[in-house]
Length: 298
Image (cartoon, rainbow, N blue to C red; front, side):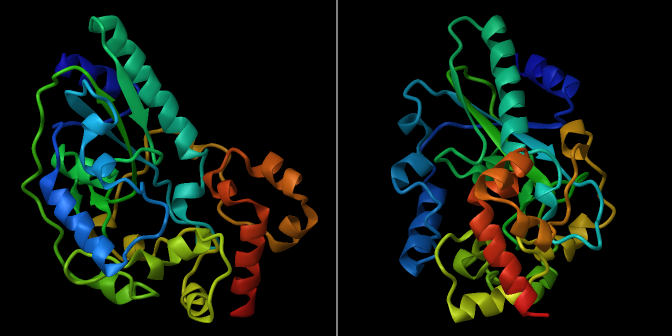
């Protein structure tokens, strides 16, 4: 059944598929408690710690987790002011559809098969799942790294009630050159594979509350008005990576937001124009604020 799963995934251009075990992730629990103690939380995380470390809190009869990676790199756009992950169609919608395809195929193959699919909206820590399922390994920049696509990948997972044979972490490591740490505008990346997300430009571009003077100063050191690619672009593991095979991330490309255009749009007009792109989720007001801060640095 595992081979049938992978065969179908290959048909829909999903090359990286692994199976994570279901259990109370003690190692992760210790990591998360340490982060909480240090105040390394953004508010975007699931508040219930048990739901982050125990898949059975999400699905009582869970027996395995299917983890898939979705590459999104389409090349560099030198004049862009958006993070690369937002260029193509909204990855939430694209990945949700593909995970549902997988789930429905398995329902036909496996009696009484049940599942819950997540992309960026689940309580579990998707990068940890990617690591323990062997589809990638951690970089010092906190991203999951792959051989073919570097760290330019999204993660989706399916908690399910079938006992797929589990995979194991790869015997590979980040080269630990430290370039990401030195290049991070806010000094968010730490040398021990930890991160203070509150100093991350990507987080600040999505923060709804008014930014402090210090946060604006960090923001201005970045290169984008939504998201941030600096720690990925500088990474040697991302040199000469392949472009994505997924057509959805090559369509309706937007790599730059024009200030005059945003000013001319109403909130409703903004949503109508950009609803198919992931940067639209915070709304026009946040994008306008970011453009104003960015303009102020010039």
